[in-house]
Image 1 (cartoon, rainbow, N blue to C red):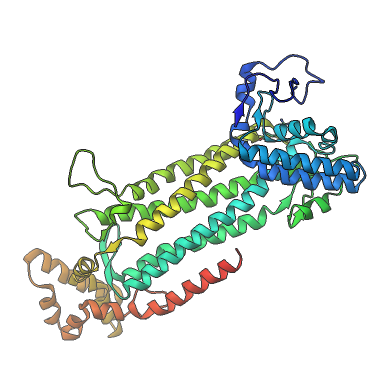
Image 2 (cartoon, rainbow, N blue to C red):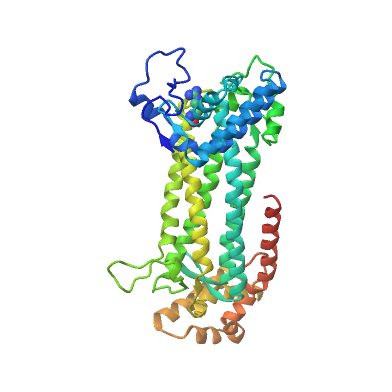
Length: 472
Ligand code: ARG
């Protein structure tokens, strides 16, 4: 891409004017141009801008504003501009404030008919259209990556089979759960993310093109035909709303942010689990980093970046919401701030997902160590209290009896299992309950963290993925 310093193109030698030169004669101050310009980041919308321009031009021909020949010239010029952008040969002038200005300027330079392209259209409905098209396409890309991540998690869960680990509350050992159950807990959170993206994509599927600057047009524009041509499911109902609505950006940012928060929580656990103290997970060298100074180090950078970048995503979302809240109807330049936030959040997630996927896919779980930790007899105390409940003792009382045994064992160093065996209300049946295998297979409730529930859970999760894949 060539960024010209002067407003004269090398190719034509013509001096380009800003779009408003008829009204404002003065040359824009550099400081204004530097602040106002968005071409450095909205160039990314060129495909959408060119596509929407073609559909708009086709409609202008259908309502007889462009002749057949003029339409052909405009389409061919748009194709030329597309290649120039792709080949990096296009010259961007200081007056090319944004992608819409650049495309229109070049089309008009190539063909005189280009001067009719902006009929009934404003950059206000144009940018809303381009960004909706881009977001729709990008959500599908994110969904593919996210579902790939879910499939990896399912495979991983199946591969560890019935291996048990300590389940935690307050990061204190609580009750044993299958490692697969723990992995799929993250998996279900990601399913909600998938559904959120699908809903966001469905909600944004509305064409704003034809709303003009804010009030539509006195020309007989066929907004319905344009919506269909752009493959939007419906068309706007209110022109003011059409050009000023950025809910779809906020919705997408939220979906990206909560996904980032989920990845951050997975990251945080990975970091803790990879520590020597926990030693639950071994990361593959290809997804770990070392230290420039300490020769023994193996660091979980990817997981840390997942944790760190969630802060950035939260910033993109809250920053944009803060921008949006003060914007009166209809279009105001504040809205230009939507793109950098959205692009940044999308790039962050599209970078993170494959890295986190690869890191977990290649990691090995130290199931032996998890099993040892999950075998602590104290992990069976809830089941002991429930055994007493089955024998008619009120739960509160049962809880207190078992807590008393725990206390005695901890205080006097007596073996907990012996204390249970010799308790008249527990005996050998109680002692037997303290076996990890027994606890693991003893859960009776729907969706519980027991080995008996695993097959059902794998099935449901697989079905959920398949259903969502259908909607891609
Ligand atoms: N670059 C602008 C944006 O991203 C396009 C719309 C400009 N409209 C205007 N009336 N200045 O929001």
